[in-house]
Length: 113
Image (tube, rainbow, N blue to C red; front, top):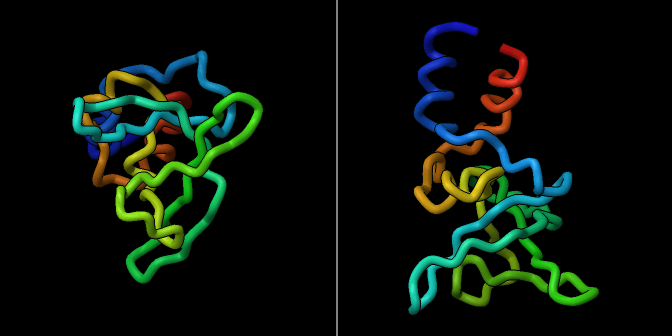
């Protein structure tokens, strides 16, 4: 691992991953009128956009998956970028890598290194 990768890991991934998350499950910070709400979501829809890829996210409610209107505008053809999905609650609350979509590659380097 080079120095640049080490610094990026320190900046974007300050906390370890949550072992309680299932495979394909992430934390998402949803802003509400009562403050921030951290929810567990599953990115299932792949939405190609001009500037990259967005994901339609779903939350488990009872025995079914319900689509989360993450942007708050009701547009079913827009989602969230990978940078807005987290593998631990603390980083999600702090928005540690909201603008960096390749954080999973850094996590992989962190595990290997």
